[in-house]
Image (cartoon, rainbow, N blue to C red; front, side, top):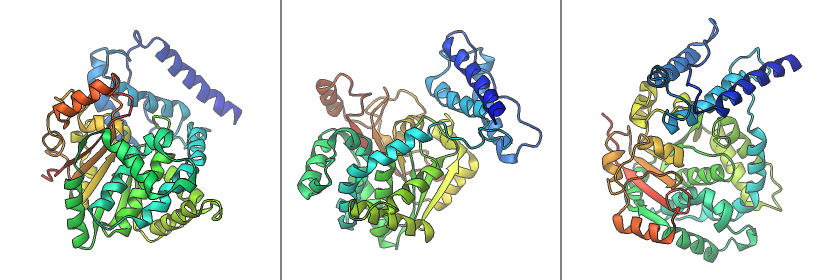
Length: 389
């Protein structure tokens, strides 16, 4: 086994050396696959070849190629170094970020207890989905600054205070349009709703809370979690992270964390009954713009999906093709015009691009905070009808 790790470390050091002279070192294709590689691996390899080709042919370096491309590529190279798909390798299915994710899971409970006490009491109305979406939007913020760590504070006042202060930092709010779609789904007995997940840890718990409300309020018959197919961006969630989170919450001490433990049991039952489904896809770990969604995924979402929530900044950047749109360009024109189903993006701003924000809101954010575009203080709830062509 030690020889196996030695090989892994050798490849890891080569990657590190490559990055240490990022301005000089050119991007290269991934290593050739073994002849007995599965069809799925061959397809994934070809997708990366297609992605990298223009930059390899242009002799681009790590620094001259687009940021989004190299950002995803470095994690794909890390998986190659580990031997993540090679069942003869010591690194087979090894998650190098497991320790950080487990720490995030353990530290999430005290904060989550307050929120999870609230979820079953949310009204089956537009107000309910607005609140559930707000939990999922501000999840990563609340984790750090807004959330009452003391579960005893889980009263309505604390929640309304949190959401009021968060609401002031909302630069666009399509909650009404989202509520209308959810009302329609509820009226027809529930639909298929997808959540394109971002991070593990507390943020994932807020996604589970949203998914719980979607089922309990009759908006969704089935919630499908769209998850990453390999470890990436350190904290991004895989299927095993979601299942571990559910197991962990269900196993909590019910006296110490009654709401969190109860939620865990509910989540477990949803998974067992097929009301919640997990789907890992390579597309979620590739820097393609979302309008270049792979055909099988696009067809599936177009035919099956009544509404998709898109979480997080990296996913949002891909919705925009990582291009600089005018801040005032409507989200419905930019994203709603091509996405395969109705789509609601929940994003706190952490990169210097955006759309669908009124100029007075942009000016207000600028006046309040020089770093308004990148520090996650401000957020948007965006909705687009989708174009299932």
